[in-house]
Length: 369
Image (cartoon, rainbow, N blue to C red; front, side, top):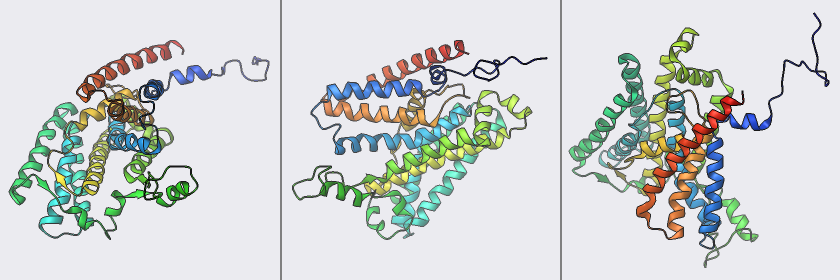
């Protein structure tokens, strides 16, 4: 049997997929469009306010980074077909676990940080184990832990210190090898050089208006890059998509669904602890109310980024863009002088529009196959 070949010498059965069809199949397409739209809007609405100066950009990037750290982990878990509503409460508990041993019992800060991360591993493992063992929806299990962890943070803090806010941690940061990973800025020398050569502005004392990149932004970019690599370039990434798409079919194909999901719950708890560590080092204090509603904001960022609530579809890059949109809107409202009371309304509308647009894109992608 003679094989028919196309004029360029290739097999006619192998058809090149146009770029626009490939783009339609990418989950972060809606987030890319949304990011461009939000930037264009604030370039006009916030013109002359300083929002897009180096200092203004660093401000909204830092806000985006704090949410993006949580959103990256939430994205992988949602792609794997599960939710974690306890990550906000984990932020509050982790901060207290860091602060109490340090300030009340004289622990070195690095030891308290390691204890917080160990607690995160335990909480993530328990969440994942219960979801897999009982067959209960992760929404229910982690909703229970939302209250349990917040109650533990408040109860332990009042029991051991008599208060819900613990300060003085900033004095313990200098010289601590582990705390240095969660505090300060990077690239200070580069920004000093840029200021000396007139690339960025200086203040009245001659110092650059931006002295460095906050370490939270570095964490955000690093976690997003690692998560993207895992999803797109490793067998474990394929297991995540398979576990969220059809868990039974994945098990029948040899995918260790139980281990994958438990590891993803552990990752979300660890990411919440990274977030808490950054907050504690930045403010020099811990508060039991920290992280309130962050679980919902993380889910919003992931959905805006194109992930499906039913699992099996999404990307870490999309979640990062969702967090970027969130940060730009939050700071943009401040720069434009709009009453911040309307921020939640705008956020809800943005979520609804994102879901509708992503649904439209997915339908078009299916039609183009």
